Image 1 (cartoon, rainbow, N blue to C red):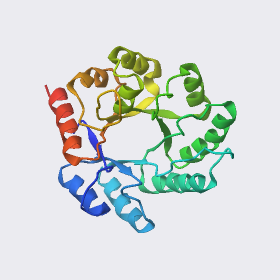
Image 2: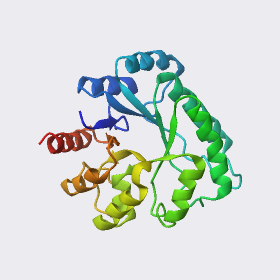
Image 3: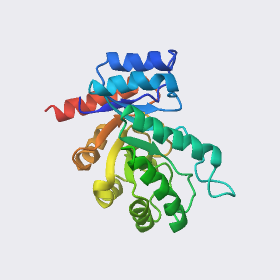
Image 4: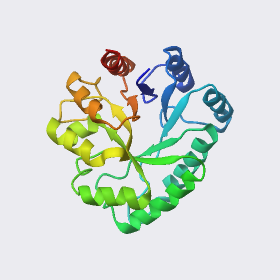
Length: 242
């Protein structure tokens, strides 16, 4: 398959029943959303076994406030994030996706804090990957690029978030992809009306954006509704199979 899927799915099934259902659909490229499918210590051997069978996992952090509030670090989320780095290394997940608070300033001090985490992750074979998640994501583009370089981070370009951030301006979206370039290693696939983050299935017009992503970008359908995620995957499969 050209595209994988996130476990960020609302389902009547319990977390790992959902995981097994995703496998039954034939997916081997899976993002483990650590909020909806939390990885417990007892799950690590099973996930390691799947990795040995050719499954390609990434982890999406369950943290929300890594750097927020009056202190530079939210210690509860900081240690949770550190444990996710450890877990990713243990199961062979190469990417750990995270958000920063929406209005946070990407300072040199913050980059230094992130660099420590980034280097710790790399020592375990894990790359930290920042995801766009707000209208402010691209307000200071030079500052963003400096931050990514200084903190040794890669980027997850969420196409649904990008559509809201640019108010549906497809040409601006193309420009952002060009400017980010090979820093992009993963992309979340979903769509919306340009006003709110609806996580609908990928729209046909967004295929022009997928075409511009760097070769080898990991494509992950991300919709809380499983049918929407599967529609996104089918659109990608049909497009690239032509």
